[in-house]
Image 1: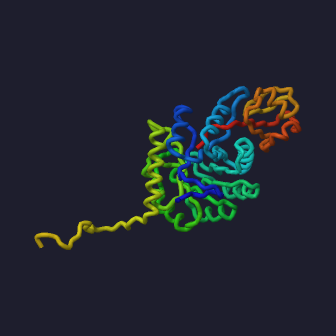
Image 2: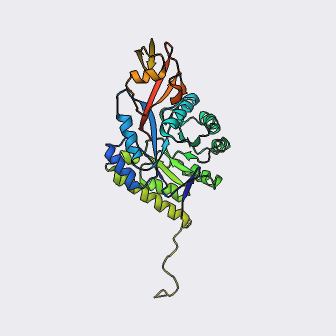
Length: 258
Length: 65
């Protein structure tokens, strides 16, 4: 069986799904269900006392029988990230943390210097860190040395739907770290983007906006799941190399009129 | 005393973080707390004294990407 293993947890689905921006809780629940995902991302936010939105959301997620990966979205400093991770660990009862430190507002590009520093602190505090990073190999090495066992390079800026902005960089990263679980996180718009990453040998895909903002989120969630499965199968099946000139597929031997 | 709670200044008579949560009607809601940027564990809230101008964060589970 072709399983993905993240921090010792075996997973049959290679899709990790965000829970934000869905038109309704029902469509979120349906998208989770039909996608077959086993991991969903969640966050912590402010809510007035007496409000129930947070509690209702948490009840819905718990009823889906999936593992949660809390994020540190919106944090800009190491201190904010570390405090948010500690708060998330208590509320969500998990050592997993999707580590995001935003360094630039237009692209929501990770601040990789703060990211490495925070990964060091959190790993020493028994967190299992899923760093949202770039395809920079030097940063990746430092994250692994900090204790990360998974790397999550961006495909493109969060929410942009652009797909894989730097296929060369992602391919180089895959080749450089053949045995590290690599998840493409963010920036995908179409299922074909996910298939492309999986065909490169990426281990999984984390996405949110492409599903949540689609006209039919459950249908799109299913489409991504199928694309991820197809891409994974293609990678395992060892695709042919592209070539510049045609090569006849029908046998030349036995051709008539020669 | 005046505290900054989730980004808004509010008057309170609570003397500890646990009392503050009760006064603000959080009840049994799943919340995480921080005081002046540092995480305060659930079991430490009753012993966490509040001081004027403290910045308190009270966070709940929400949707995330």
